[in-house]
Image 1 (cartoon, helix red, strand yellow):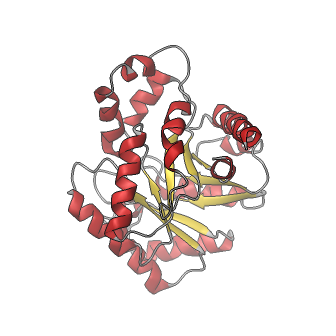
Image 2 (cartoon, rainbow, N blue to C red):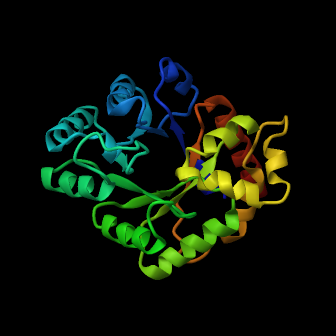
Image 3 (cartoon, one colour):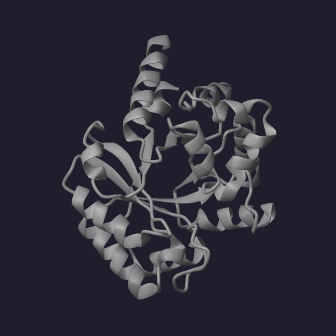
Length: 274
């Protein structure tokens, strides 16, 4: 557990002034920078370029639905190469309609491979609780095809440790070998987290809350949410042979200070136990 927490990384949304708040993170910390339908890929690229000289390991998102065409993709790859980016994450994206020719991440991954790039690591999204528009069998087939072009996956936010582990075990049996960074909610105000969770994993994380007795009441309580119970539920399975979990992906919702403090405190707790 201490090792996984040590190798966790934070996901943030590019907003004005966010770079100053990231300076509290330790040197060489991983920071994923999202690409939202409202802000577009330019906001992601501009933040990457402002942070390129800092001692952080940046993982920009290239949301397929926010890329117009191959020419636009070439420009994105060139800008990221100039910023010496080594790792990117390629989701389909949450835009209701594609900006251009890419409706999903698989076609964009193929074009990236054809164009050529210098990235050492390419990640793709996975959906432990399914997707309302894509069947379970289609999700599996897409993941199997994407792993030809990627070398890690990140699970969408999930509040159910049993469902997450069961899904991962099933994926391993089906031939998905990509190391899996588990997507965990960070520290956040409960009402805000419940609202935002409807936008993560196309609403599945919000619906799972309604199925768990007492959890919705706790979610809407006064005290901020901390993922301690979720972590405890995952703990017995993290060392299983073949499960392939290198670390955690923490959805910070830009609550960087509290989420990073939680990570440090929890890391210290498990380090003492070790």
